[in-house]
Amino acid sequence: MIVVTGATGNVGRPLTQALAEAGEQVTAVSRHAAAVPDGVRHVAADLSEPASLTPALDGAKALFLLLSGDLHDPGARPADIIDLAAASGVSRVVLLSSQGVATRPLGPTRIAMRALEDALRDSGLEWAVLRPGGFASNAFAWAESVRTRGTVAAPFGDVGVPVIDPADIGEVAAACLLDERHTGGVYELTGPEVITPRQQAEAIAAVLGSPVRFDELTRDEAKAAMVRFVPAELADDTLDIISAPNPAELRISPDVERVLGRAPRSFDAWVTRNIAAFR
Image 1 (cartoon, rainbow, N blue to C red):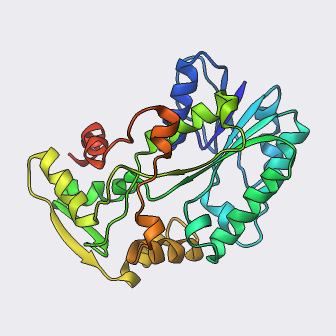
Image 2: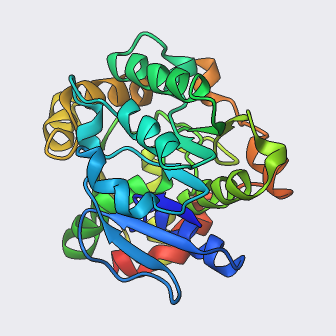
Image 3: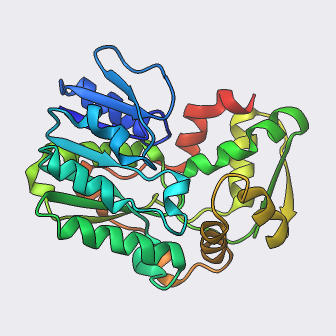
């Protein structure tokens, strides 16, 4: 049995589906009750209280670990989840980390994530680490403004990074959970091309078949919006990257294709699949 945390999110949902379609027994974990694919067990748990995960880990062989925002806060102890998994008999953990661990190693949230990666390596468990860059699904933050006002508001409109479709992350995670050849692998996950926020707005408009205006935010305006959902330090780390990506953050990684045998999906493909959210 495989446990998927964050199972109702943009990465966890396609991962859960992929594992179920592969015939695996899956336990989907989220904070609240949620619909899951047929045959998948759901357990409500709060990762900030690791003991609440104990029922989900009963009989599990593998764990996909995705941290919620509060587990990036100072004082959080996500390594306790790894200890609990080991004590529960889990043999393999796939951790969703961040590209910034390698590209911005001195950022506060990156230091904490590196420590968690190190705790996993030292745990004695089989492991794999996924380090994605920016998510295509961050564009969901624009859905309401596109629907109601035909606008996209974002900072740094003409600065791009190779955003990745979360479905690709989910498929790579499934491969790492199921195939021992990926044990000890560290995979940097990006999309196939650099794309700016302004170009993302244009892609949404093209699929909609109607104009979408781009409004550029200041960094302070963008941070004020972000801190409603993530810790301030994580917002700052993210804004540092998207305002001035370094060469490593602009690199198109081969790792999605290396694992899946195909190129990563484009932002246009992500928009086409999710256009209902913007109508």
